Length: 134
Image (cartoon, rainbow, N blue to C red; front, side, top):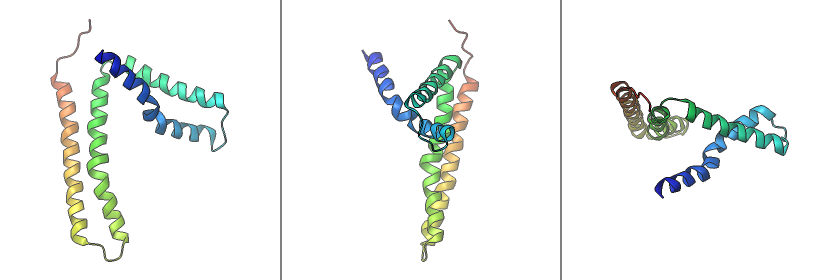
């Protein structure tokens, strides 16, 4: 029952996860022109098929997901927010320099945490015995 529930969650959350990719691909393919409904469906179906093929053909798709997660989530959650604040604070008159300095320290800490998490994922992959299949 749990596997069926997880399958439904994956199925119904796919459109939400694919939306940014669909928007980027459609924008680059159709150059701002209004695409025909069948071409939009074909583009979205191709993107889903590409994702499915990647998951089926890669020998260790879990490692790829873990690597991308460790690298991207650290940057998105820990590095970019303080960096954006520093950039915006430089443009604002009378910005608090102490707070900007703290944000730079947080950015450096985020880079270290991201590097450590990414290293751990790669190291655990290299340390684990190879799967023989079957």
